[in-house]
Amino acid sequence: MNSYKITTLNDFIILRQKDFPFAKGELSSLLSHIGTAAKIVNKKINKAGLVDILGRAGMVNVQGENQQKLDVFADKVFTDALRSSGECCGIATEENQNEIVFSDKLARKGNYVVCIDPLDGSSNIDYNVSVGSVFSIYRRITPRGEEVNNEDFLQDGTQQVAAGYIIYGSSTMLVYTTGNGVNGFTLDPSIGEFCLSHPCMMSPPDGRIYSINEGNYIYFPQGIKQYIKYCQEKDESTGRPYISRYIGSLVSDFHRNLLKGGVFLYPPVENMPEGKLRLVYECNPIAFIAEQAGGAASDGRRRILEIRPESLHQRSPLYVGSENMVNKVLKLLI
Ligand code: AHM
Ligand code: MG
Image 1 (spheres, rainbow, N blue to C red):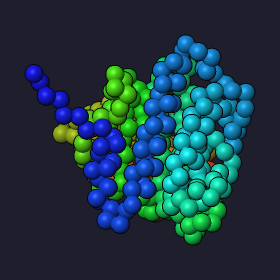
Image 2 (tube, rainbow, N blue to C red; image 1 turned 60 degrees about the horizontal axis):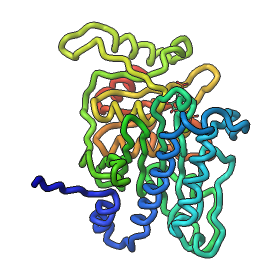
Image 3 (spheres, helix red, strand yellow; image 1 turned 90 degrees about the vertical axis):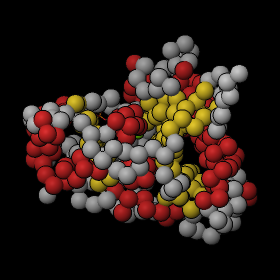
């Protein structure tokens, strides 16, 4: 009989607890609550075509975007899971103007805050296209026992203690880092567990995929227009012309490029001079994972992780992926 060795997400989190010599298992517990919330959201997404959860919820979020019903659902599931974890004292999410402070006694003693986009790329959901969730975890700055405030959430990306994403695609995966490499887990629906499927994920230093919304071409900075031209030129020594792939779901576009080698670009455009993506809960977690996998992430001038956020929903240009490809973009942007 074959033997099957399975490492579940929870097994792995416990195994890795020793990476943090002074840790008391709080971060592990938090990650495991995120894994559970992801399974609940996944279940709902799988049923999206069957029950009445597609389409707009009739509300507008803080970015002025129509909230999709699943956005609202995912936001609530992650919020409730983190609130009940006992380790998290507050969260910032794409769907809420201000941070949510968990003020009960248990939560106030929690050591961590979480910044999360509960359902990224949700405008794709009605069309059966992959969406994701993306999160960052920070150690609080304010003393334990007090209520958290804005400064706990506006930390540089370098201060992240963990970051990850869940991709709800043809299979569901959870990928995360605690600063010791990147590991990926695939949800096995038959046992309802995330199982280690992609240990020690590494970004190829070079790749052939570029991902950008070329519909915005006329608004792009000159350097980005030059980069697109470079990608489309013929040069056998570098494998050009490259391949253009753009789903319009950051998590999915980044995930594919991480596995295959590629670069994702969201530059400034006319009506969004800082680009579209949000620094605190989209760019930072993706940048942390990219760097941990040997890749790079920049806003064109600075390392994403070194930008000090000034507000929760601040936007930033994002160039992320294979290191040599990001460096080529940066050279043309100077
Ligand atoms: P959202 O958080 O409202 O879903 O928006 C973020 C998404 C990203 O997943 C994706 O990379 C980007 O928006 C796509 O934007 P565009 O449609 O302008 O190309
Ligand atoms: Mg988003």
